[in-house]
Length: 466
Image (cartoon, rainbow, N blue to C red):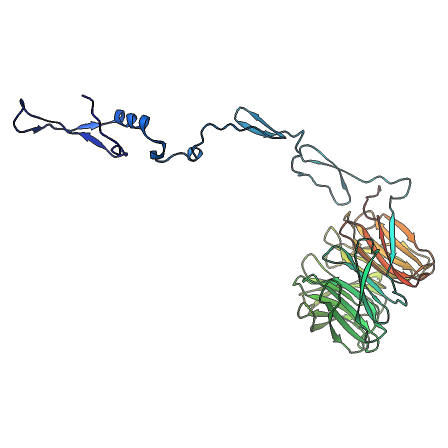
């Protein structure tokens, strides 16, 4: 007998066939025991005839009802059996190698490893070129500073009958937009320094000669068309340019000279616009200082002692309320300081000689000083870390009115390349930064043209053979 159980019966639960019998065609049925269990065979019959939508627990790969679409491999891929792979002759693997400080990546292999080496010089000189541009109307200059804005373009602050800011419209500074930030006195900005705040806006520390005061100008936009100007200290502040940087807390901090007390001071801004600041003394010093932030997040101040010695103050907190001071035998005039690729301070100094001092530890308890240039009078040093991870310094040779640049070939600058520009034309001020393309930018006062000039060079792009 063929039994038709209908649909919707076999849903996974246990099912049984119950049979009852009687004799002949009449009488009472007797139910037989036990019932007959319906096992796998009826379920198999259901699976053969069931609609696809009635199946439970369908595998994810089949849930969309697609079980026969064939897929092919695209460009740069191969399929062997069930293995899909990248063809490395076509697709570059992720770059995984790296070069040590002072070396450059010269080739990338198919497996992502790299080949390192120095860039070869031509003859005894590195390959370099440069572009120059002058800032229109920037005559009668006493000081100049340069930084790189958040748009990747140079921003130059300078003194011309007050504090001026020029925003370059391209990397070569062939076009600029200039604004007067503080025209209160012709000598406002006679000494100055500029950086970019944690809010992305330019912020300038400068000396107001009329009031013998330290001021700070926080720009409201990248062009400095408007600015918040604050007098931070008017207690007979004087000397070479104040130095400004941004601390690990995101607030500006400035080092400067307090003439009456004969001390080097630090002004730590209380907010991003620096509408007020907390002042702290570093110690007895004279005229020159420079400030940066160490790898431990604390300020480091290089300054000149009254004995014309280079000293370094390592602050114990972000406000420099306490310091540890080390004094070296190197000269301490016209200072610049930065942090090398090894995490240690590197300091430039210009006076009767131009020298570079590399600290052996973060406290500068021992140093190595190298005399790079001598036999002249030097002024206005600046130092940065170039695109190759090595120190790059610029300074003025007052005797020949020349702009000079030193490209160190190792971290301690025990080997260097010295280049001379603008003989008879450079004077008074120089500033140095590294552009977003890795090329150094120097801003300085051009004596011949009586204008601020910016030079963008290829220095630091290559690596020189020892």
